[in-house]
Length: 85
Image 1 (cartoon, one colour):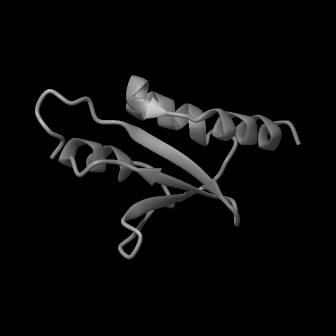
Image 2 (cartoon, one colour):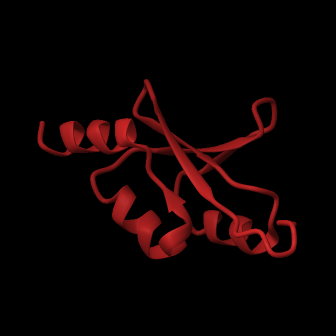
């Protein structure tokens, strides 16, 4: 569970093989939201979620997580390049 008073953050990382890694703090509400994403897979060794990349994935994640979804500048650049290729 996220610590009291602390806003949880959902972080994305892009990896090869067209996968997106989603890192979230242990919070039942966030996990329930991740489980609505088709193709998601929990990686128990690395302790993160993996989902296949698709052009509408980021908008779907923004709809699901709202303001707590964090995109780094490099992630934004990767998304931009993938979307327009």
